[in-house]
Image (cartoon, rainbow, N blue to C red; front, side, top):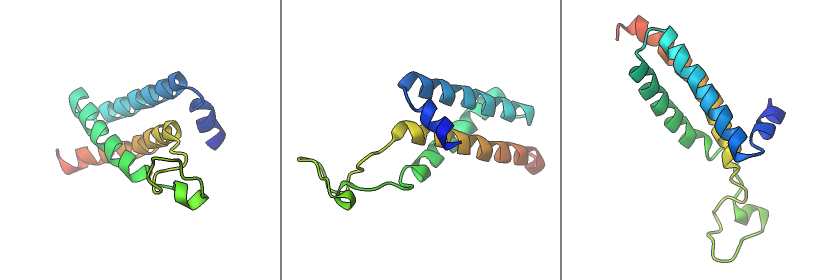
Length: 110
């Protein structure tokens, strides 16, 4: 799975395509669980952004930790943020979480 994510993160357009396609699949799953289109998109948006900020600090190393602080930057800044990979992982994890939440909504009577 990691090699596939690395391949998809190889260019901006591949990353954007993977994120959009997985997001469409997640919203379709929400529709399958009887959520409205607007409700599916809105809930998925909230789940995605929440998980993005949960995933951003995972396995990040600062410039100070690796000993290569660039002039004019904070030593605590990430050495390699890998934002494309994180966007793909966020989309994968949020699709799973969203499917679970969407499945729960009919049971809650909402």
